[in-house]
Image (cartoon, rainbow, N blue to C red; front, side, top):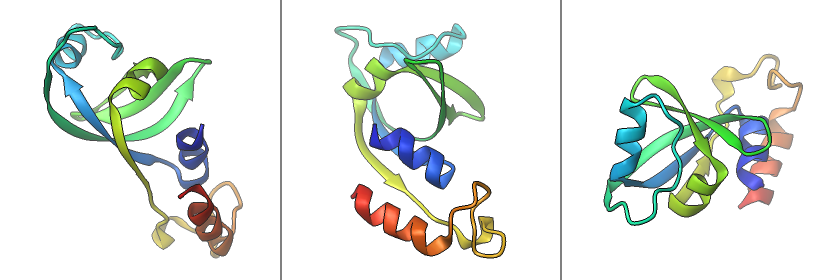
Length: 112
């Protein structure tokens, strides 16, 4: 999945979600975001995808906290994504994982 590769290479990938009403209920109940069929879309939301836990569980940050979501939720509601390279996060023109800035820019272009 390109989004997970982007999250690894760049530290996070910004994703735009069409947010169903059920997602807010799930947050209030401390539950992961999962697809609830028939739940109406309340609006849009932008979150950074920062990683994964296990085979089917993704980690985002929203409303000041870590939120878990299923890959099915991402597939159903994600309608845009963006990756960024910040030179401020580089040490000697390399990412914490050791990737050179020029290589990251090339990887970013390849993901588009």
